[in-house]
Length: 434
Image (cartoon, rainbow, N blue to C red; front, side):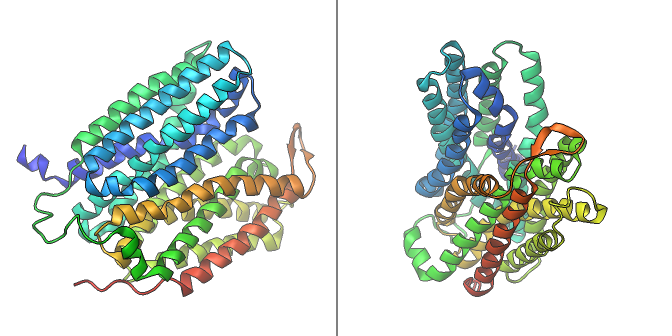
């Protein structure tokens, strides 16, 4: 029993995966968003804001509740389990209510509050809670440890999507709200078990590290330019990732791979999760962890630039090489998007130490909040503003806008270049270990 209490896999890795594999299902929204819209009598565009609010409040709750995570991971992980499950159950209730009262604004607002705000608090606290604990248990391989948990967040969609689809198909009338109620129970159990198991290593305080000390904002002020640089490049990487990922399915159709949309979407999800684990583990081998961001941005610029130069999307699958370049772009961006997430806490710990790292990481995640509101919307605006929709050859019922998708790449290319410049110029030297 004592060995289990001091086992880093039982006390850190497994609970981290239980927490992150639960909250990561927020990215399954696209699986059922249209069905929710149809069931409650609103447009898909109206219901889409629930997801945007969820990501926004994820980042903001992480920023404002980071001190709670810092002081007591048991309290924060319990808050995460309760809020995430309650938000999911509440979403199910308001979907049921909306089905009984078609077009009810109360149902729509209820979904915004439950899926967006309440679940958002669970997302933010649940995302932060295991990170510092993992870095303490896996002190020599911090990147690998945090990458493992964050990969669970990224892989959650690939794992949960077929389960959700099976539930929707088998639950019959009202299956959409029944699914939410069932999953609320399942995820609460998973997260509560994670909450019970999660623990920092014994003797950590005696080792000389204290939970108390300078306020996070004071620690940040020691190297303000570095923090601003990390925040900005994190924000830009997420914005570019979301902009492209939100148009991913239509881009795949546009290059003539309509029949492979499902398979390729699953493959890009694998790259997203693999990037979280692979880039963070790779970063452990560098003296300067910022090197991994330089690699991510250089790869993203190269992949985007090649598709821009070859006009690979507007070619619409006529040239096999150009089609392959577009697919490589999707894989690279997904991997870099995931890798950007997993390396943030360890990069911050290199520059600001382990004291208050949960709170500092939480403040940094506010970048995720704002990117969640701007990434998808920016891409949608560009696609609507530039080019025109045309029927896809051989699929007259499928409308695509190749010029619009290609224009998104021009914007993300510029943003990736800005992020790279920030990465090379604003991120200072690693904090010297005492």
